[in-house]
Length: 394
Image (cartoon, rainbow, N blue to C red; front, side, top):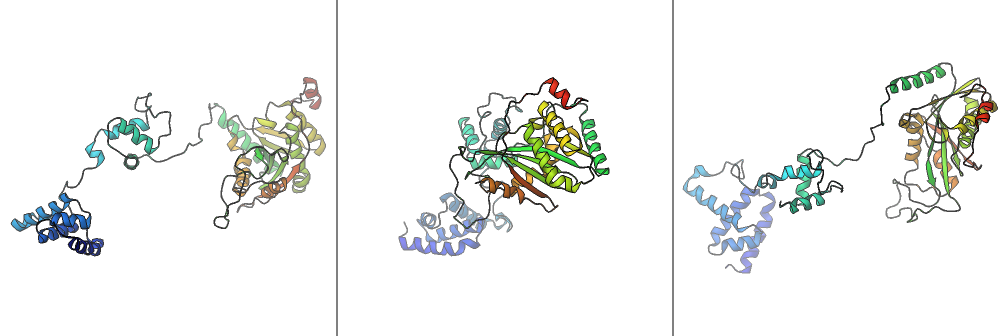
């Protein structure tokens, strides 16, 4: 057994040389030191370097083989003999890859009763289930195997629109042609919709903004509605031709009366100035909500608006399930969301300012105004009232 000073001496040499040694040269250097020390050399070198005894013995065998037959020495460009080294987990357990795929895609592999089908397929859970089946594997190896098999972490993607109506393309072509027809005549075309309700107060808002390190803006832990400030509903009107928007921020209910009032305010503040000679107005809207195609109140409210502003109103509703094609969604509302990310809407004034300061490099401008009117729900429209509001019907 070698004494402590010898072990320290070897450790010091190894620490100096190790950064410049590869696997093979490290093995041969350790073997040379062990042989030079004689009895107990393998133990001493192992203690000093942390190398396994079998690694040092392998180096000694290589040295002895080279002394007997120099041609048996490995070429200079190799650190191991072909096929040498510890086999990968996949090679040691060839059936594990198939077992892993069966867990990740149980329905594709014909196993609807897979134990992880209805759970989050994280690498730890997958590794645990594989070990339960008798395989020796950890989460890191599972992650490596999944990547090698072509798997990646992916979120859901919204692509399905529901049942495809045979006239869907014709519907979109008709709406597109109507928009072009109005624009050629220099008549206004607007896209309208309601943004989701937002809590007003010091509540968390998704996203991040630059602030001094360690000084995030503090907000409430729970999103319980503030009874004083409540919620707001944002109804938007987007001028397709001039890339200009209007948002009425309501404090009551999202009704057809509220939607029609937002259109009236847009026309009074922006539209009438943009289109002083306009005689018609085209409105593109979703088929549901406060401006739904089957809402009688929406039709009555629009007729009243037409009488007030002196325009002929034409409405084109997008088919059900295709609201993302409504231009206000991706031209204006998405930009408003980006602009206020990470910023709590602590008051109505802050909400208005965040909306009104939304701009893009393509020239989008948005104006916003608080609508403090009350719009009761449950208002019914009789057949007689509907006919009286529009002699030609809807």
